[in-house]
Image 1 (cartoon, rainbow, N blue to C red):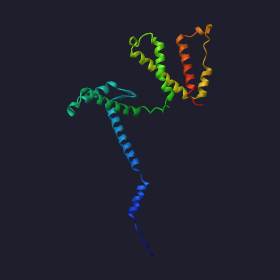
Image 2 (image 1 turned 90 degrees about the vertical axis):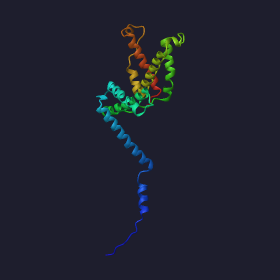
Image 3 (image 1 turned 180 degrees about the vertical axis):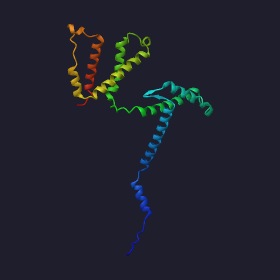
Image 4 (image 1 turned 30 degrees about the vertical axis):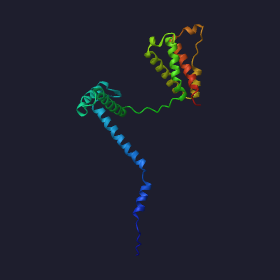
Length: 219
């Protein structure tokens, strides 16, 4: 029996291991993901142990109580930190713990399609339109109406934009079908008085949003 010797090149072995293994970026990403998972698990444990979540509902009094207790410890560790900054830091931490604990109970929602850029750009113009029609602006000066009224109009404009984006995600055919079965109001006939004014207005608004959604919907 003959034995054949073979020289082993360790540099070649190390090079093959390096070439077949993960890159530096992949290794760093894996380490970061592991650290994120550990931090998430730690926060979820704090949230569960301190009762920051009750079922799927945030326990706001418990979150505030924990934050106040924690904020009182900060002056001993950092005398330069103000009470407001200490409380803000503690609130951010315990809200993060509450969200982590809630994610264990409530499954993640399905991803929502991004709002079209053209629709997003039109929100502010729609808010001013609602503001003018609702509060008789500019005949009534802005200072007499107040910012809260414009904020309300802006919220309504965003709600309309979100609903338009949601309807657009249903597709053109679904919108056409919904529009076809929607009853029409025959103004001037006796049937037009069988519904309340708010019901008629709601139906007109839904029809208007479906029409707007058609411009963004796909076949």
